Image (cartoon, rainbow over the protein chains, first blue to last red):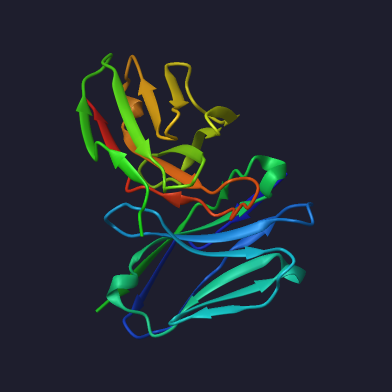
Length: 116
Length: 115
């Protein structure tokens, strides 16, 4: 069975601190896709990144970076020099692609609060 | 760039009424997904369509039905509404199977309140 675990229910940091959101996934498939979505207080779901299982290269996009480690089945998300606008719920999700009709398996989400 | 459009953005209905939510996918996206998100929960998959055919079914109640039309827009019809149906309903779209991108792009959601 597939599962995504985001153990951190809520994280609160002061602006400009770095913060890492953890994501651990479970699947026996060798081909899978991992995602991060952001849901700000306004409610929309914003796609942040997709990582394929066969590409373990880490990615950096501005203040955001993602660390994909197959050995530990983790796909962690780090925000550097956090800002108040980063406050949101962040979801990690897993898809098996065509094998699962592209369905997303969601983590429970981590609520990130950035205090000014 | 064009995004997923959902209408209405907010909807208030009474118990036992019906509601219709509309979704217009990103142009050239042919797969549509519907999700229901309760307060403090992750999105729950309801149903999906590919090329106007139902492709997968999740936890969609029998009181709900959906379809995808020839222009790829989709409608979620909800009947005999219950208080527990109050939630944020998302539509998402993704590109075709021949050159899939796998990521789903979400609309802004429709907040349904049943009183």
